[in-house]
Length: 153
Image (cartoon, rainbow, N blue to C red):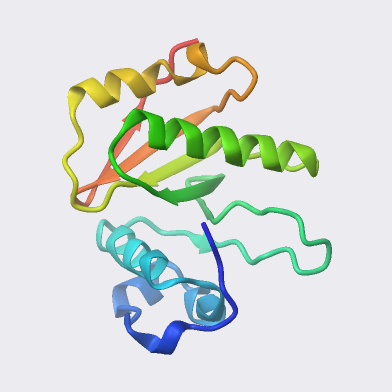
């Protein structure tokens, strides 16, 4: 996710539930954009707990966005189209590899857009279609539900 240097005037409040489930969000809110705070608020409402991964300011390398369920996850907000999601994965994996960073677990926030069975099927074939930019885990957050995509090998 894109980060920025200022909080953007504080348009979006961090909910109490988010502060409880993502305890370091207050310390890092200056690195987050408003759409990221909206996503973390929605994620916390589903009772998922995690920690936001701070930017690597020392080496300026890419970092994943959140640690939960024992893994580091890259979070992206996109439209519900295969091409948008696929391109976002490929770009993140490729750019991370250039700097010896691993990005292999992704969460896509599709906000309130519907998530079709057709898109689910297309995403399950991501690794088959992209042998040079494979990933291990793919989740889609749609309408306050976390949907696991079973990736075909």
